Amino acid sequence: MELYLIRHGIAEEHQLGLKDEARSLTQEGRQKTAKVAQRLIKLGFKFDLILTSPLVRAQQTAEILMAAGLSSQLETSDHLSFEGDLQWWLRDWLEPRKYPQNTQLALVGHEPCLTNWAEILLWGEAKEQLVLKKAGMIGIKVPDDGSPVGRSQMFWLTPPKYLL
Image (cartoon, rainbow, N blue to C red; front, top):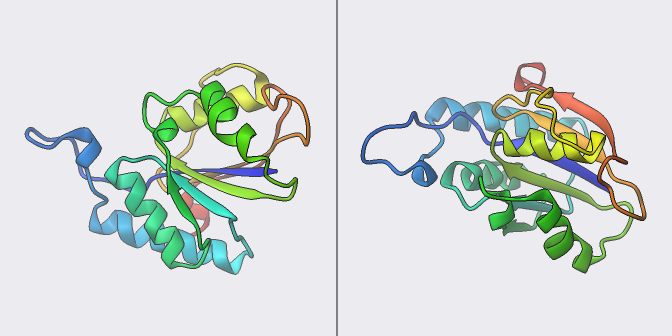
């Protein structure tokens, strides 16, 4: 299985009176995310499912990916919010679904959660070494059996500037 960890696009700055979870993508964020999505289509990407954080900026990013044709299925998961825990997601969300080995899942979320998840999958612990820019993507191949923690392989790490 391949997991594609995708950070949301450029969002509104923090401001008084605006809850963090309600921050939207900026016009620039929408445009760059749409360009990245179009480039991913040209590169042949297609996801079986896009799973997104419930926060507005992540949902908007996921909707842009859907509109570009990267997937026909979209779901929301609290596991991808700031409090999300990789072990819980693996146990409570991924394992019960028993996806086939060739499944490609896009997970749209936030930093530092996504890079922490990637590092745990790769090295068994978060080392704060990976950098994931807004609208960037990390591709990770997880093993066909057993725990993916510390046993997965990264095959893609791209900041959006290389896709624009």
